Image 1 (cartoon, rainbow, N blue to C red):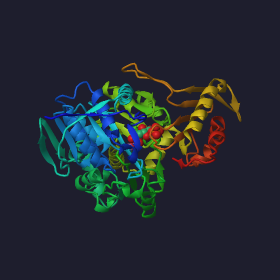
Image 2 (spheres, rainbow, N blue to C red):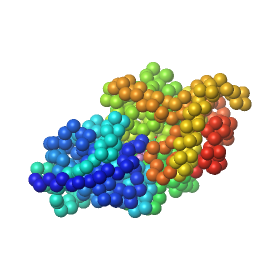
Image 3 (cartoon, rainbow, N blue to C red):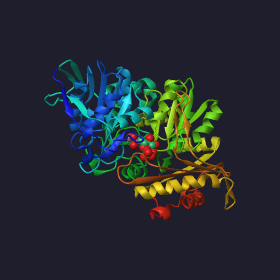
Image 4 (spheres, protein in one colour):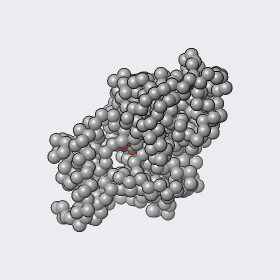
Length: 541
Ligand code: VG1
Ligand code: CO
């Protein structure tokens, strides 16, 4: 094999964020930009020689070019087997499943998740390790350090590979397997759930369901699972063809961006609606005229896990990201299992699962999953709901309201301020952090601050410590304010303010109205208007 050693020079800023490296497509299209990062990933692996690498993505613009580049570099770096999703498609959870199933040393997932796609939009790349989960912080730090001093990368001369046909291609010593991106994942889902009763529900005439794939990666998965295997009518899956620009929309499953789905469910009187994001790891759950907050969804799934065959013997434990409401903690307490609180991002759940400490975990940002893979998994969450709906015969709203009547309700909202000036955002966070010590014991409209700190996480499995994972302000009336800057944006900074409050009655109250005093206090303590000039958030979830 003729391995070409190509000289290169570093780009600054190739630092993976909450979930991989995300930049504008045009940034990735600069000469050697992608190559530098991919080589740094390969250099972070002990040895690529003879190993298996999985490659796939959410089908967004630039995926195909990136895959051709990666194939040649992977072969030059000594990989012996490459597993590639047909047409470059692999949802994030499917990539995790395939890495685990075929004993790969890791995988490259090409996605910027729910961020828009197209020539002027976003691209991203993340490395998942042998357990199928996101690279650890220490590994992404080492990748970043390598990109800052990189001088060369390896590649070979080869014609573009046909990735649209399932089959095997040999180049030099490497075997390239183009696989059906759906089959392994769909088989895994079939092992976990009670497909028999779910099929009765979905193929019957009493239950109407709609899934919105948002022109993103889950279309083919949803068609195979819901329609082919579970017998749902064809019209159950909408926007099912992946497009490289997601049809010009944000493939982000929330009430704003999945408004069509919400309208169909409400106007047509459907029983259950769900949507997933660009790379298939997020989920939104709605019933008729009823929105399920993701924090509640996690708690409810944990409380009802005994109805799902794979989890019927009990959960080992649960975990949630720090900004996620404490609804699942209440379930864990009742079940007598541990509940872990981790920083934002899926990379912190992997160790807990590998160590057998947790079965379910989730984030407020529409992410829920279990130890069947090491990523969050949108369709898995939807299937959990269908399984529970089939087992109980209850509606979405009945299930949630029953849950609240047992556990109480954690009102939760997140306010995002997008594309704010990065320097102002940094100054605002600095000022807030410096003020924390003085906040404890202060009283605002009769409510006192009991704790104010920057969240640090000590991983109980490997002992690593992650500092500065977001500001927490706890109040003596059960309220909580969490503040952090996003690590997935590609333009300026995004401020996320998370607000939650536990209540034991009055569950029908409007969340924004009920949380208004907390929202006002947060705005005042953070100084949002003062530092950013903004008076209203851009997105409220
Ligand atoms: C956001 C969410 C976080 C999630 C991450 C990746 O990160 O808040 O909970 O894990 O996106 O999800 P940030 O740093 O912007 O808040 V995905 O579906 O975008 O890969
Ligand atoms: Co995603």
